[in-house]
Image (cartoon, rainbow, N blue to C red; front, side):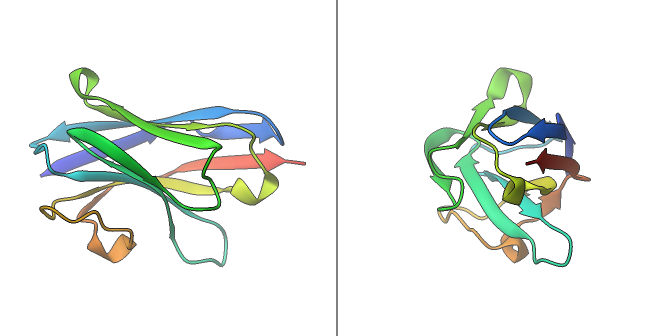
Length: 125
């Protein structure tokens, strides 16, 4: 079992920054994919960024590429999402998720096995 707890959401102005944290506990294997998804009202949950728990190449949605950075600190069992140059369209509930699939980095929320409770990010124009 893996438990994920997000924090760091809040209100930001357009052009501003926020950093989200995802504290993980339980048994986490090095191959687990760790991802951030987001869901705006009336919209489907969408992929934002992902990275393997062991590190390696990060993946980003085109909409956030160049503005968001995913990272992890294994010593703190925490995954981060640094969000810069925020836009009003980034407003959503952001979720941290873990995928136990070996060898494949998945981008669909249906492939992820564990989820946090979500943290609200609101960007004002």
